[in-house]
Image (cartoon, rainbow, N blue to C red; front, side, top):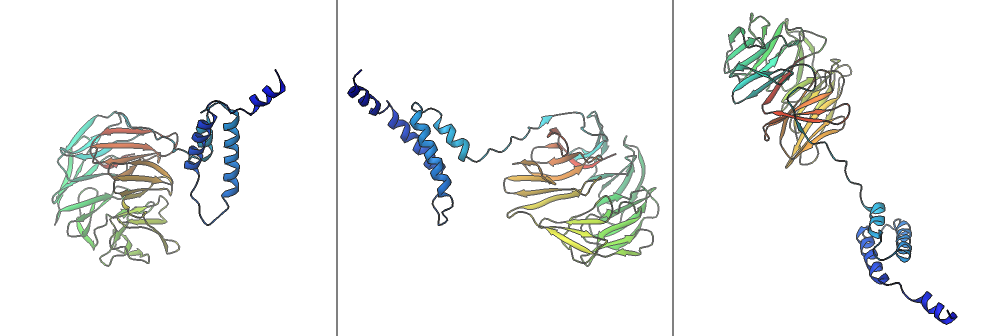
Length: 364
């Protein structure tokens, strides 16, 4: 081959090289950030374009240019979340209390159900030996098999009830916001204090210390037997819906749609947690074994559940969250989907779905 022919072949463009160069430039220009007044991006971008051009120059038309560039400038994809698997057996020990159109039922570990009757709501006793259930003005204590142990008639419609940690007291709230206390055997029903609509909570480690939101809109801790004031943290929470204690009894959280306030009872301080813009809190509860709080926040078209980190997100409507007693699972009320969704909080991600109903409690 003559020297003249060799020079002409060396300078001749590769077939399709111009098309490859245009495709490469379109990928790079689409991925590059828009120009701004700040110039710090120019040096790395110039180096990136030079590397891309070099790659185009030495590869056949269309050879992996787009993949190479995207691997360096495209945002990383979010890790896929596990899909909910239908299940029958509960993922943790204990039994569920659920309420649906047929009333309240106990769900055993194997998924079998025992109906307790048509009640508006229910709650477990501390060791899961009994259930307190209410409908209208009637408050009843039943066994998990449905046998009625006692009934009382309240002076107004019952809104909620909670057992004390030792099982010897039940605090219940009427629709007129009257807080009352009755003994665990159904005796001694009496008015306790005027209260707001927040569901009260018993303090862990103090069998008969009851926390509630007073008529003045402040949290009060009182001895349920004597009425003696134990603590009244500073700060009003007139719109609180629920109260929840940390397992050590030192902190109590008051949750409303617009904020969660956590009160440190030792230092008489509190901190505020606000939802993201456009979101509202639907539920909040401390874990039974640690100071981790499960928080459900809803925004238009999305529900997110956090427990130290985001553990679940869905386009459906999540209305509540209940911890298992080992603190490893959350059972979520997915009312729109007619399901209960169990999400593993600690350990490998896992999501299970169960037949519908609203959670009323998870027994030990």
